[in-house]
Each structure stands twice: as structure tokens, then as C-alpha cells.
Length: 620
Image (cartoon, helix red, strand yellow):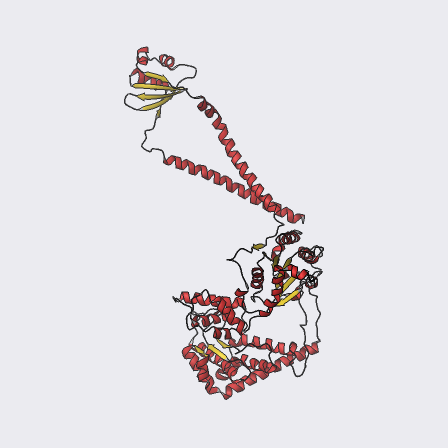
């Protein structure tokens, strides 16, 4: 710890030194600029005054060329009869006439020159003697003042190091306010949160009945499903202050800073009570304790301990609702999940088809849409999309329409953006040779034909041999309605569809390419899940098998292998059987429908893309 602090002090000193050098350079640059500006005001045509010696002055007076001499201290301003001006210096403590007489100038010649004395003011004398000392002192004083300012800023930042960095959304900020109208779907979650809103508005109604204040609400769900947006909507509906902070903002390299920020955060929330305190990605500090990695003095554990104390310690009377979001509830510490801390757990799922349509309608409000835009069809084509995915989809469609020079977003723009979000942008520069194009066409035709013939596969929506992302081509098959349960028959048919491209290449070209590598990976993964996770193997029966070894993770125990080598060999045999049967099924379908396979491939070679309507015509 001392080493860390020493490094930090060294870094601060280096930073202050760099800042000081920068300020000095800035001052010097300022003086240079000022000198340059003053030089601009000098008259370049002005005659320069020449300095002469007293001997030369005596010669000029003897030749009667001098008109006037003005004495100012020891300085002599000389004006000749022809208008030329010169300067000189007289001897100290000696008058000018006496000096001239000593140089051989006659009294008569001296009397012909108009000699006057100009007295120097006391202020000029004083400034002339003080300025040489004052200017360096003022320069040094300016440098010291800037150094003290830097040091004061460093002290202020050091004192605020342990303060919370939470963003505050005040109730009166209507422009940034979010309500349930801005959140589509998640009806059950909204109903559950209505009680929280009602309590924040009317806490006395609940306390009179002896109801305890709910301390925390934990939002669980996959990334992008709207956890943060829903928390903002609760604050907007309740019209209370909303403190938003990320779990990673508590963790610092110094021990104790995270706990200090937690205390400061809850202190500010209590001052503004009733209020909502939202901790996003709470798993950054809320993981299991006691893993033996870092010990009890680990910074993350101290931060978690402080959160536990603040949520349900000695003070349980404040009207502060703590909301948190995570997509990893399995790694959270049990003490964080017990009643009294997070009393409510609200699970959010990816939206179904109706919710997707409602979410899309919210995102298209600010965009000019064409009359042919069918949002319901877009919702049907986006199963598994989260709310964030749908927002990104609409944004990509607007970008595409703008790039194409359109004034409105059309249905074609949205459908093209679906494939861009799912697979990546089109690789127009990736041009296939005639041979590769034919192989890709038969490969994708094999997927599409097997998927169309087998009864439990999803309908084929689109087939293309245009490269997108890492794929040289793709077959888009999507369900007509959302599915929550999947049968063994569906998985078996999906395996055959995965291997349709592999079987088509082998049958048509009597050879294999690397184009089927991704299909084989997906098929092997699905077959492994069928045997070890879903219990759908006829030989092994309804038994699940965990991984042989689990990698160490913070908050999880290390498990040795869960099954024997004999069982592992049986699992491999069953996986192989699933894949072999699927490959045989695909080959049978393609052999029986070879004419349709050729039709699809020829259409792909000619058009490169086949939509659902045209594909169904080809299939009769």
C-alpha cells in the first residue's frame, strides 16, 4: 500500500511539474506576444536618433550647426539647425558649458546655442530606480501564485477522491425525464414496480398499516432488455431524485475509497429522500465473498460490506429505494439477496412479438417513415432481439435511408438493417469466382431445401449468397411465432438443416470445402446439449452431465470432473449418433428433391438473393 501511495505521489508531483513548466512557457509566450503587439505600433518611417560623443558635439557647436540642447539629467537631446536630432551624455557633476569650454569651444559659440534644462519628476526618478527590481519580483510572484493555485486544485481533488461520482437526475428536469410511456412491453415488471412508485408518493399509507419499507429492487435480465431504462422510468413516474452510478465506479486502486464513496452516495440519497439510488452492473462489486483471492481486506469486499450495512444496517428508517441491475445473478453474494436488502427481484426477458412491435413503434416516432413500412412484419423477423437491438435496428435503417439520399425510411431499409444487425454489413468487395459462387449457391440451397422439407424446422425467410460478416452466404429461417419450449423433434430437424449445406456439397461436387466449418460447429454444440443438458439421448436417458471441469471464477468453487471416462465415451458416441443421423436425413431429403435443389441453386447464381415469396414458388 505504501508503494502504491508513493507511486501516486510521484505521479502527482510529475503532473504538477509539467503544469508549472506549461504555465511558465505560457507567461513567456504572453510577454513575447505583447512585445510583438507594441512593435506593431512603432512608426517604421520614424527617423532614428543618433548617439554622438561630447567631442563631436563640441565640433558641431564650433561650426554653428547646433540649434538647441535640452538637458534632462545626464542626457542631452540635441537638435541641429537642419532639423536632425541627436543624443549624447554629459559628464556627471559638471555643467555642460564648463565641459564644452574644456573641449575648446569659445564662450561666444556656446551663447549662440539655446541650452535649456528639463527637470525630471520625482515619480519618474522613483520608478526609474524601482522598476528594475519590481518587474522580476512581479514575474516571480505571478509564478508563485500559479503554483499555489495548482497545489490548491490538487488538494481539492485529493479531498474529493472519496466522494461519490453518481449522476443526479432532479425531479424538475422534464426534458430528461423518462416515464412508463417510454418503455414498451415488460407489463409484469411495471405492475410490480407500481407499488414502489406508490410508496415513494404516499409512504404514510403503507407505514400506517405496519408495512416495512422495501429496501431494494433487483432487476435481472439479459443485456439490452431495458433494465436501466425501467429504473429511470420509475424515478420519472414517482417524480423523485434519481441517483445513477455504475458498480465499477466504486472500485479504485486504494483500499477504502470504494467504501467511502458508498457512504457518501447513501448520505446524499438520504438528504434528498424520498429518492431512488440506482446501481448499474452491481455484480462488479457484489460478487461472492470469501474466495481466498485477495483476502478479507480486498477493496471489492470492503465496498460490498459497506453496501450491505447501508442497505440494512442500524438505520432502517430512511425512504431511499435502492435499485440495481445485473445480467449475472448467479455470481452475487447471498447476503446481498436476502430479504431486507433486495426484497424484490424482477426478471426481464427479451420482448415477444407484441412487445417488439410496441418497442419499434416508440423508436420510429422521431423518424419519417414511409407508408409501406410494416412494423408487424419487422417484429416477426426479429425473434430474440432485445430492446437495445431493436433501437439499433431502427437507427441503422435511418442511416441507410440517409446514405441512399431518401427522405423517408422505407420497409426495405428496415429489412436490410435486420440482416446487418444479425450478420454484419455486406462485403461488396468480396467477389466470388464462378466456381465458388456455384459451390456457395448449392451449399445455401441445401440448407434451405432441408429446412423447407422437414416439418419441424422454422420457415425459410431468405436465402442469399452475398457475403455478410464472416459468412459467404446465409439462409435466414425464423419462427412464425415466439417459442418458449423446444421439442426433441425440432432439435433433430435443426441438426439436419445445419448439415444440409455439407450434404449438398458432398452430393453435387463429390468433394468438401471449408464453407461448412461453422455449420459443423453449431451442429456439434447442439448435439452436445441434447445429450448432456437436455437429457434427450435414448441410451443415456433423462440425465444431465455437467462439464468435466469448471474454471475458477470469483465466488465459485472449483469442481473436479463430474463423470467417469466411461460415461464421457458414451456421451461422445451419442453425440456422434445424433450428427450421423442428421447427416443421413439431409442426404435423403436432397436426393429425393434433387430437381428442387438445382432450381434453388440456379436462382441464387442468377439473382444472388431469394426472398420468402419467390422461394415458396420454387418449392411449388
